[in-house]
Image (cartoon, rainbow, N blue to C red; front, side, top):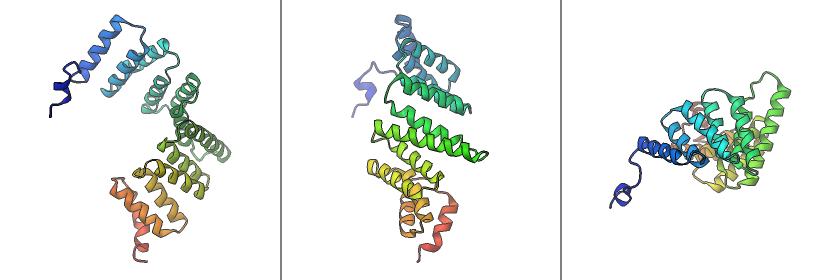
Length: 226
């Protein structure tokens, strides 16, 4: 069977050629936000983060409602350890485009990362706010599997194990082979002392290639022969 290059000789041969083509396109039309964005994504793939960040800002200047560009900027912030910056850019993504599920889900994720155990009241507020954002993400995209599992984690952090189980089961209803959900369910069912289900989901997570915590495997081991 012929490969894609032989079927379409106009496709770029590699990332460098793709970047060169996008730069040439910008020479022809510097006001195209999509081209700036695509160039930024290609540059991120080559880990040229400084130039990619500039292109993302250019993309937003040309297309202020390009929520994906804000999310990518948030990802660059996260990559350099700026968690608050990541949150702010994802917040701007949801303002740039109403109902942008990824922005809400990312805000939920970031808020959970900001829980540091230093102030119980503040931590609780962060988790509650994360839950609200994750629910919004799911409202706008009912098939957002990562939002379900992150929501499950937020519930677990509040000690709401049953709610966390439900969220992860909803993730599996969307994608039955999602390993994170199986791992999360193994942990939750172990806490609920439902060892049969804990072992079942743990084994599926392992089969799917998930790096299950050795402590979980060790804790489940005595219950395999029960």
